[in-house]
Structures are given as structure tokens and as C-alpha cells.
Length: 344
Image 1 (cartoon, rainbow, N blue to C red):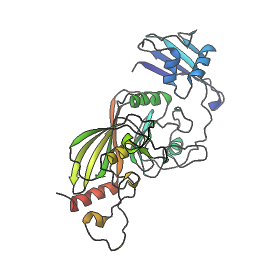
Image 2: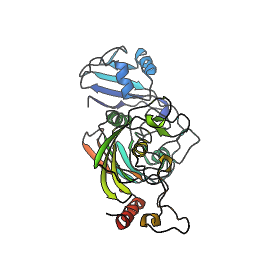
Image 3: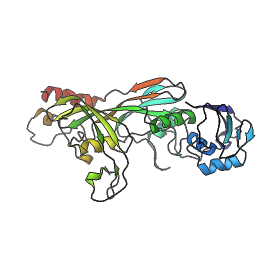
Image 4: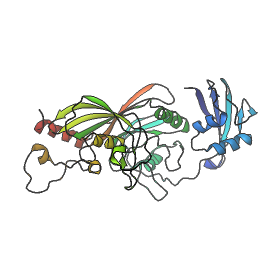
């Protein structure tokens, strides 16, 4: 880590209405890094234009003196800044149960449950993880979106598993930097259709939003016309093979929406239950190979996918961490049925 930071004074007389003071010490000079760009990375919710205005008005000093936005911070410099209060937010704290895997003064790790979205899209929405953590934690990071307090990264509504929450801006910034630099390691547990022929492989296929269907993502080979695609890389490892199915661990190297689901579908092995991307619904009798006299309740009606573990460096203590979320009971039951009826 190149810098240290902390609140060194608080003159807040009116709660959230007053600015707060931040004190940052530069540990190492980065050639070509201007002060405004450095502060933009540290305070992502603030625009570069706003930061340049604060610098011009003297609300940012270096070693106690006014400076310019173009100044390149040097090793040992002390940057002090009056941070304006965040914009008002309508994320209302709600007493929603959280399955907390780890918590300290800086971060929370939760085991997100299926069926709950991570944050509101606007003031009208409630019942989200953001609402829940706003009730649970006394403070949360502001981030760059007033409707995402504390939210460092997201999981799909119907994907369960480990998720990190930041309690302060310092922790949020340092965690976000790890995600940006791809130094975090995320591992997902999944059950896919078909038997993977390779023990492990890398899927390197860019993804983009479908031009006609909302909330659907595709790779270039699935669309007839050009559109904007972004790099997407997934590593998979087959852990247990059955007749018609494979238990697989998926490790995304990038963080695109629906990446794992689209990638597995693209190689002909959609996730069990993921009807959105070519998967199918299976009942217990389907797995057992029994004839169905009438339709039976599926074992799982959504993608068989769970964020099993995340490895990262603690944003403040700088120690390596691995946090795991136990495999949900319904996925464990499916594996037990596969071992009973579909083993080789």
C-alpha cells in the first residue's frame, strides 16, 4: 500500500451536514500522478471537477500549504482535505436478517441469501442488502453511488454466497483497488449440465449486453451484429463428474454481469436450473431416472451457483484473508442425489 489515511479532526456540529477532515500521508511518489487524479482514486464518489474546485478554493493542502491540481505528490507529503458531506440518500435502514461470516471495525463479510438484491436502484426500492447493512452497521462507506452504501461488489439476485461490505471509505477504496487489479480470488461452487471433458480450463470470451433483451448478456458468436464487448475470463475446475452433470468450481478473473452463467452456457454446459441461459429444470425423479406420471417440483428453479469463497488482503491490517460461505442445503442435497443415482 502506498498511502495511509485517517480522520484527524471532526468539527461536525450538525451531524452529516458539515464536511469532515481527512489526512493522507504519501508513502511513495508515483511519477506522472497528479494530485487531482490521486484524490479521485481515493474518493470515487467525488468528481474530478469537484476535487479541482476544492483544491482551487484551498480546501486541499499539501504540507499545510495551498497547492495546484497538477502537483505530483511526493514521498512523505501530508495531504489534508475538507471532504464535503455525501449527497442525501434514501437507503432506509431495515431490520433484515444478515448471515454474518466475519466482522471487524472496517469490513463485514456476509453470506448473501438467494432472492435478495444487493442495493436499491432508486429511493422507491427496499428490502435489499444495502437496507439491511444500513440497519446493522453504525457507519458504512459512501462509495460512488448514494444507493450503494458499503457495497464493494455485487452478486446476482439469485446467487448466494460470500459478499464484502466496507464500513468506511478507506476500506472501500483499498478493497475496490484489489478488485480493479484482479488480486482478489473468488471461487464459486456450481453444478453444470453434461460431463466436462477437461479437468480444468480457461474460458476467454468477451461479453456484452444483448441489444434487444433486457438483462441478458451474450458473447460475440451469439449475436449477428457488432456491439460493445468487454474482456471476460473464467477459469473452471471439474471437481466431481456424474452421468449428465459435473460439480465445478469457477474462478472469474473479470467481473462481468452474468459472466459465469454465460461462459458455461457458451461451452455447452449451462448451469442446472439456469433456464435463462439454456439450462433445464430437474426433479428428484429426473435425477433418479424414474418415469414421471405428472410434473414434479424441480430441485432448484434458479442457477445452481454459490459464491463459496473469497481471498483478499485486509484493507487496513494488510493480512491475507480467506472467507468461506457454506454450500446451501439444496445444492448439497442435489449432489447427494447425483452420488446416489448418477455416479460412474
